[in-house]
Image (cartoon, rainbow, N blue to C red; front, side, top):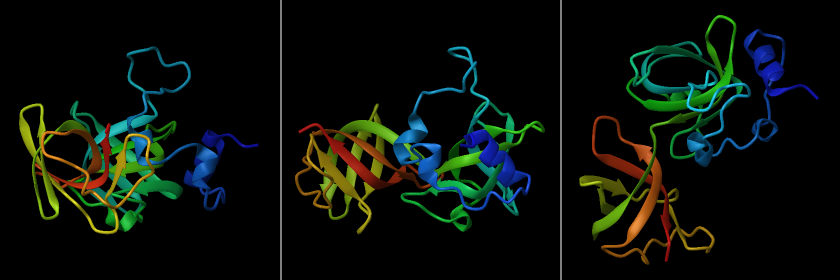
Length: 199
C-alpha cells in the first residue's frame, strides 16, 4: 500500500498516479478543514508544514499563490487527486483570486504544498439568530452581524441527532446555531452549507 505522501509526490512529479480516490486519503469533507490533527513529529503548538491558509493572490495553471494571514506566501499545487470544496465539491475552475482557503497536503522538498484537499471560502461560525426572512438568516456572531443565505438544493439543517434536512423552517429567532458555509469574499455574507441546531 502506497502512503499518502508517495501518491501525492507521484502525482506532482508526473509519475502517473492518476486520479486518487479521496477516501484513500481520509476524510476530505468540510469538517476536516477545521481538524486539529498535525503532521507526525510536529510539536504541539508548532506550525503544521502540511497545512496552509490565506487568500488566493494569483492562479497559474494548476498552482495557487496564497498569502497567509501571517503574511507568508504559500505555493499550492492542485493535482488530479485533490479534493476541492466551495459550498460542495467543485472543480478547480471554481477557484478565484480573492478566495480564502484552507489546504492540507504534503510539503514537497522545494517548499510547495501538494494539496490533497482545498476548502475555498469555508467558514464555521457560531451565534444566535436575530432575524429570519425569505431565504436569509441574520446571525449575531460575537457582536458582528452575518447575513446567511439559504441556497436551494445545497443548504441543510441538522437538528440535534436528526438526519440532515432541507427544511429549515424549524429554525427560530434567538436560537443558538453553528453554521458551516462559504463566505462571500469582502462581505459579511455567507452561503449556508449546513446549520447545526442543538434542539
